[in-house]
Amino acid sequence: MTIEGSVLVVNAGSSSLKYQVLDPATDEVIADGLAERIGEATSSIKHWYRGSEVRREVSLPDHRAAIALVVDLFAADGVDVADSGLSAVGHRVVHGGRSFFAPTLITDEVHSEIERISSLAPLHNPANLIGIDAVTALLPDVPAVAVFDTAFFSDLPDEAALYALDSAVADEYAIRRYGFHGTSHEYVSARAAEFLGRDLAEVNQIVLHLGNGASASAVRGGVPVDTTMGMTPLEGLVMGTRTGDIDAGIVFQLARVADMSIQDIDTLFNKRSGLKGLCGENDFRAILERVDAGDEAADRAYRVYLHRLRRYIGAYMIELGRVDAIVFTAGVGENAVPVRADSLAGLENYGIRIDAERNAVRSDEPRVISTDDSAVTVLVVPTNEELAIARAAVAVAGM
Image 1 (cartoon, rainbow, N blue to C red):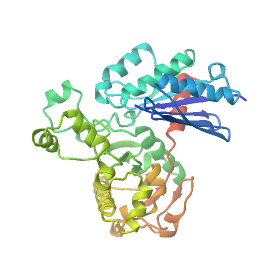
Image 2 (cartoon, one colour; image 1 turned 90 degrees about the horizontal axis):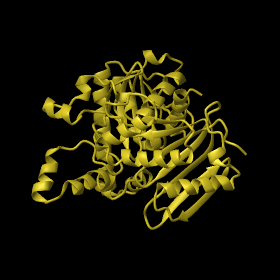
Image 3 (tube, rainbow, N blue to C red; image 1 turned 90 degrees about the vertical axis):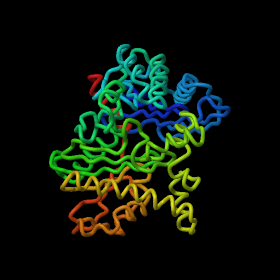
């Protein structure tokens, strides 16, 4: 068995390593895996290769150990990763700052620059670099390409990108809206236009990437003009464990009155807030079950989530002027039927009409869930960030 000519896609988080091997010629997924709780007392790994799956509870003290285990699991499948003929490795890197606006071949200089701007994403970029280093040590001769979450939003207009902060301070510390989930928003908006049989340049879309992390974007003719995430992935929609939009004065209040440190507040906003903070749960399936059962806390959390989502849908409708499509994607967007229905309920006067039967259909394929007479087409388009990264890696590596 071989993976020759394929692309390895790596997404290294602070305590996780997600990977996938794809054939860029056919879009076939050959292997897929996830190592979690790296650095903790007990870690886990799930490895899938050509229909065969392995799950283990293991000890993974660091990302190098995780990579070593992945290599061993491939060896058990009959694949020598180090001599497999991979054409490229695509690494997800969360923050490109004002340095990287497109997928980029990783050189020593690029590596150093990603490290330099890591202060913009201290929870993400250092982990991404660990993944880059671990894989490069294994595959030193395979072209490695960084694909940046922020790249798609790098040319946002000033009115969307700039905060009303002292300009000298903002410039000195690179404070502006960067936007995230860009690989997904770019892939989904292009896929939606393709599915509709229309030129991307002619389609105005609102893309709703709703997962544990969530973001929305306004895309005019394939070009993003606004997005909900800001300098960090904390801003915008209510998320699984993140606050989304919050009054900055709350930081001062917690520091003064609760005597909380910056680290305490960072942890509170990023890991103990959002849906989990409101009702103790960030699994959307469980929340919806609790809502159906009449759970008051879950119902309140759901209403807060919807309120924020509908606010941005309305704002982006005004910003775009004409909306041709509203597109749902990612785990919640693709699977949570009530979220799609409730977020667009009562908007018939704006030409948005959901077909309940179409909305209830579950599928891994792009599909229309609006009525035939809806002026705005509402779609569900599954995202595929790994495929997008693989394609970018191949293009940059010149394969």
